Amino acid sequence: MKNTRSASQFALCIENRDCDDLDKRKIYQILPDEEAAQEGYLRVVDESREDYLYPESYFILVELPRKSKDALVVAN
Image 1 (cartoon, rainbow, N blue to C red):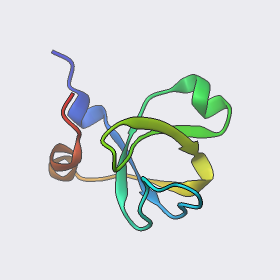
Image 2 (cartoon, rainbow, N blue to C red; image 1 turned 60 degrees about the vertical axis):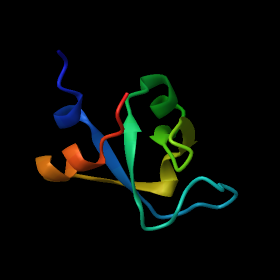
Image 3 (tube, one colour; image 1 turned 90 degrees about the vertical axis):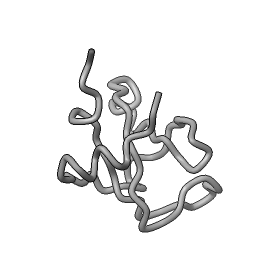
Image 4 (cartoon, one colour; image 1 turned 45 degrees about the vertical axis):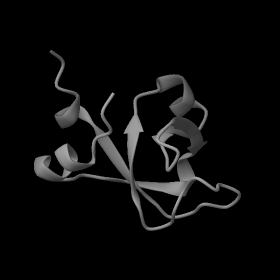
């Protein structure tokens, strides 16, 4: 079984212009998407509980303790 919880990345939202499903000052789970990253986007699990692409500039990547990651990771 793949350990996705410890490999999960998270980011703090610092901008939400024209994005109804993002809240500023909230931490979101980031899913791997190399192609999107090359274009300047992050794949984010937003308030709709779905993953969408948002501009990378809307976020700051944050490193969280394992317990925090476990609590925040979205169940697949």
